[in-house]
Image 1 (cartoon, one colour):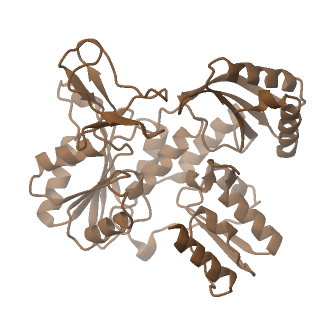
Image 2 (cartoon, rainbow, N blue to C red):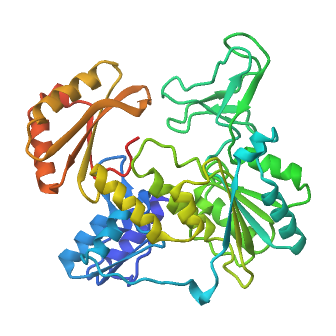
Image 3 (cartoon, rainbow, N blue to C red):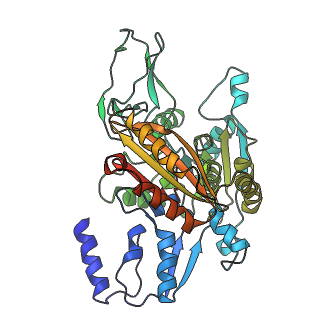
Length: 450
């Protein structure tokens, strides 16, 4: 809570703490004499503060603070960000590789299952036979299973089989996620919600059905397939109460549950000796996003969740279900081969001029008037088009073109010189009137282009 956070902050300021463990904002804690900063899972996008302003990346703040105080920084990750590994490869950072697991445990075996085969045989299913067989064996042996799907809710949306109507958010350009347990439709961006209708609001038909899957749907199907299994579902919907996630993890660790179903909160940092099987329900959810980091995030997430299996004395196994089993992120993750992924990804980044070969600035304009974001960004783009060494992409509608009632466009700027990029952005923004700058946000080194 805020009060607890204030109490800890005061303890640190009084010099009563030698070690501070915390999330993103802990990098600003008032330690008087910092000698070591450890950024664990340094690749995590959540280290970037996007909302509210000021925007900052805790990893870069850690490096800047250590440089100012003479401290040492350790960036730790089994799947480093491409930018960090590039700097290590070039000698800008020191590199200390760990080539094996703690206690020399073997890495789990990984089996990739092509979901297209089921559709070819007219036998589509949520769970491949290999995964169902693996769960059955673990239940018989009293071993534990983690099932991962990075999408909460019961289904992605409701779809009318008669007229094609889909349930959409009135404030955002996204569909409403169906939550069956509460019988409600929820927008996971603005939190708008309403009761799920029984009949189609457009044609009045009664064939309004869920489409797509979420963790709630996985939980329901697993309980049908394994009625005696003890199941825990861990996502944002089930962990809203204070300390709820810790209670669930303690319950799973103590062996009071057989199967843990969850989103990315179960994919990393968990060390359960009883888990010998991990099932990735769909490896494709992160691959097809309109973002140059999509492949990197998919590889990192798959590698991290696979690492939950076989951390005890018994070997682990991972079943990865995918409609795109040949994708380089999936195959490299199956081989536990970061450097193979990196070699492919760094070549792609260099060819297209993305970080670490350029610095980016993503300028977003948003307004309730549909016309104004584009007009404002075109005016800015015109002022920047002749800047030396600057590449201007757009403006174009954001992938999430409407959010919380406002229309959104963005302008992407690329430059190999970070100082020059900041200067160009500053100069361009100052050339606009105050009204034209209204509703604009500047994201330097963006972690997402959505």
